[in-house]
Length: 224
Image 1: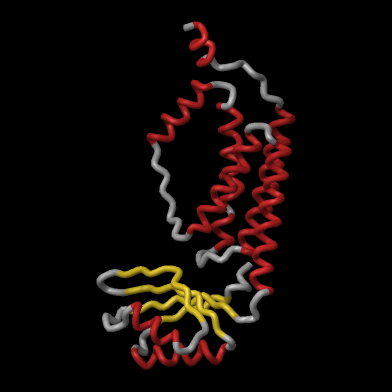
Image 2: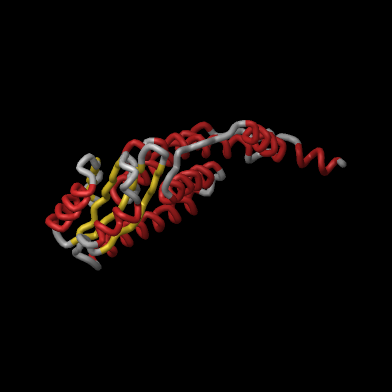
C-alpha cells in the first residue's frame, strides 16, 4: 500500500528554468526545420506552407506536457482522462500529413523526456532520408508530374470517363483524391507526361465532353 501511494505521489522535482528555455528553443528550431522540409519536399495537394505552421505549436505543446507529467504517474493518468473528454478532429486527407504530424509529436516527446541527443540524432537521420529519397526519386526519371484537380457538376462526367480520356494523353495517372456529392464531383490526380502538349491535348479532350469543366493545375516540383 505504501509502495502504491509512493508510486502515485507527485515527485517534487524542480525543473531548471534555463534547461526548460533551452529545450523550448531547440524544439522550436527542430520543428522549424521539419516545416521547411515538409514545405519543400512534401507531395500533398493541400497548402503545405499553411499546414506546416502548426508544427512549432504542436511540438512545443507536446514537449511542455511531457515535461510536466513525467514526474508523476498520477499526472499522467490525469492527462489521459482530460484528453478523453476533448475530441481532436483534423481534416487530414493524406497519410503524408499524418506522418509529419506524428514526427512533430515525437520531437516534442523526446525533448520533454530530456532525451535531447537521441532526439536530435534520430531527427537528423530522418530528415536526411526524406531529402535523399526525394532527390533520388527525381533523378530516376525526367518525366514531368503535375497535380490536376477537375471539378464538374455534369452527371455524365464520371471518374472512369476522366481516367479513360486522360490515359490516352499521359504516361501514368495516380488517383490522389475523389470527392462526390449528388450535385458534383471533384477528382485530384497526379499525372505523368512527357511535355505540356500531352497535358493540353488531354484537357481539350475533356472539354469536348463538357466545356464547363473546371481545372486546377499545380506543378508538383515547384510548390515552396
